[in-house]
Amino acid sequence: MARYTKEHKQVTRQRIIERAGQRFKLDGIDGSGVSTLMSDAGLTNGAFYAHFESKDDLVANVVADQLRTQVEQYGTLQPGRAGLEDLVREYLSPEHRDHPGTGCPSAALLDEIGRCEDGAKQAYTDGANAIMDEIAARLTPGDPRSARGKAIALYTMLVGTLQLSRALSDRKFADEVLEQGIENALTFLR
Amino acid sequence: MARYTKEHKQVTRQRIIERAGQRFKLDGIDGSGVSTLMSDAGLTNGAFYAHFESKDDLVANVVADQLRTQVEQYGTLQPGRAGLEDLVREYLSPEHRDHPGTGCPSAALLDEIGRCEDGAKQAYTDGANAIMDEIAARLTPGDPRSARGKAIALYTMLVGTLQLSRALSDRKFADEVLEQGIENALTFLR
DNA sequence: TGTACATCAGTGAACGCGCGTTCACTGATGTAC
DNA sequence: TGTACATCAGTGAACGCGCGTTCACTGATGTAC
Picture (cartoon, chains in turn cyan, blue, purple, green):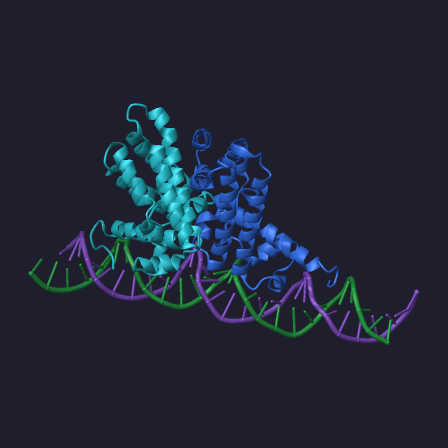
């Protein structure tokens, strides 16, 4: 099974990274074993080390990929505050809360990334920077300095709110958290 | 080693719960093995099941204990917004960021709690409710309804901001996040 | 008060299992002739 | 164009290790006499 096309191995590698992203967001990084990750990608465990040096190496690549994807998504939002208002409503929706596997990597993994090796934290740092720029650009295009502080506030509110809603076993309380989060974030944007 | 005093076993149990809380916040729940947890409490692994039904059972008890402690701490803050301003400054301090083991359980464990069994989520739900009440009582004692929404916004901002700061490998960026978080939270309180 | 006994918190070895990682091997492919 | 070969992505068994959990046992204690 070798030498299909020139890009074959890179395609496989990318598939591993993307499926691993979903799995990590569902079960956590510590909670996802290499064998499971490879079987998610339609492969067996042994092939893993032909693609990555270690699980830590994969984690760093997954974090980078996840945030790159998020930056791209945010890049397609409407310009200005209207785009951020859409973001708030999508982000704090029950759909997003109930499907962490396809959702925001920060909401699913942020505290675990804080405990990771430097490679993953480095990847997260670069991605977070890009996200803040993307948000700040929509806040006050004329004044990027103060916008950056507001971007941090908006993003942390979104992440914290979704995490809180996911951790609550009481559905009504969890929904209340999302609704209040939307209201507060929209007020914050005005 | 039995029948010391009547409360001896409960004292031991509480010690296990408190040390496990620290360990969980440092290494994550998945990242902390039962043998390590027991050795943290000065015991051997076998004794664990004389105190808890399972690791999940311990986790639920730890989460309940951690949030109970946090509610107590918040209860000792100054009354009114002054107390919340103190909280913001303590919560978003480099000291808190750099010592997760003795810090806020939500900042260290919130996304992992979202993936836990129902027992832990139930315990978290009760605790979160009490925390929101404690914060809301200091916001606008006269209007607890709207205060609750603001309490959620404040707490999620604190949690998200500290998590973000912990996940960044760039110290300057991490400090900037804390400082902007303080500024934004204090503005929010006015 | 002194001694024999029942209690039970804690010990530590062992269970099967999945972890991250290694490695000898396979076999479909592109290339060379 | 047809065949032999080198390549190398992927296989699957195995490694030592730590996981959560079980269990026969220990021995310091409070209690009964």
